[in-house]
Length: 386
Image (cartoon, one colour):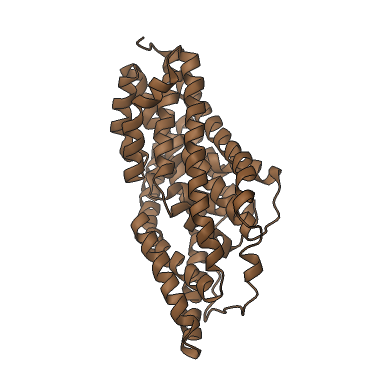
């Protein structure tokens, strides 16, 4: 995905430069690109609630098979850890980014002529994201409680349909969506501010994930009576694998090997690691918050801490099944960026660009953080080799 996003950014800049100098023909090109941009934004708004319904419901139902104290402990700690990572990023990036990201840099350059699409069709979603999230949790828990096999079968099949739509429509379309947005920003003179911001956001987010991992392993090491630096060093293969393939789920075999090296018992690591790959999103959370804060700054959007706390709580819940699909965490959050933080479609597109420009460091931190939770869970529910 990183390669396609990089190509999309370069292509968008080139098209923007050409259209800006082509007069009437350039205006036609910009309006065609804007039409795709507007229509794809409507498709995203339509699909996001379906993604939550389709993926979160079976994830909760499947997790319920192993219901017990350990399941509740791991899911609770994972959720709190993801929320803690988000708020850590909010306060840390909130202090750092204003030092080298100009407030209103893009908003101030947006005084040029507004580009009007040829077609502007509204595609209302079947429900809002909060309704989808509540219905998913109610249905998932209900499937487990009453052993509703027929409902579970429907949920699994619906998940397959949603996954197909994401893989065949959304994922291929995202780079084009980004390209059209970059093209417009280039033609209207806003690309300079965004390009410089992107590099700073990636650097900030990456640094914050490393700091948070150190904090996680300091806590895990203290609880387990182990050397946190040694524990963290043993997780390096999982981190590097996650960095290279940008998928929490795909790194599970490597994460299991690293947890074994850290002395986590077999039963514990076999249960915790696959579960955390679906519910523990510390790296993605930090990347999401840093990217969103950057957009808030450069577009000079008025937001409050309460809004980000609300966003964090909902994002961590919606991300429960996101790793089952490429860019799933991002997709699960799009609706909350609009409904909670009030970002426009163009601002969400810029945030997506920041988020996807170097996707791997989020999953790398996710899987490394999973190892810390496995150590803590083994401390209280199993035996850790010393």
